Length: 108
Image (cartoon, rainbow, N blue to C red; front, side, top):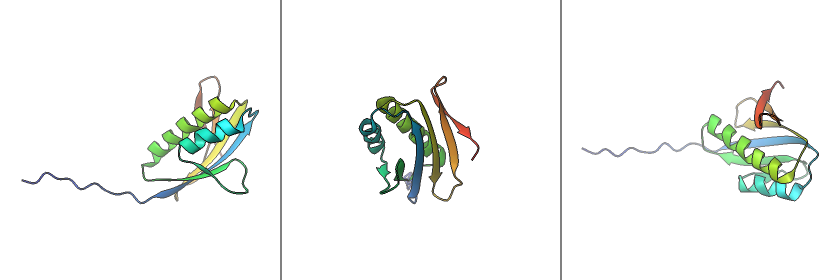
């Protein structure tokens, strides 16, 4: 009996981030971490980045939050908010809570 399971290949989805960050001390370090996370700057759009994903939405959001945490920690900041869109899903907004050290959802 053949127990081979074919992997389901996900169609790549575009991921767009628009970041509002105050008090950024080191933009180079900030963007280096985003690049390591797979995000590229959108030309002529400051603090806007694009990437592709083939993972489920929740995994993509967790990756974005993790990458952004590293980026803001490396770059230094006083506050950070992000609007993201994954494929055709509605846009979502988050802000970084410095006390809990987590991103929390906000209404758009």
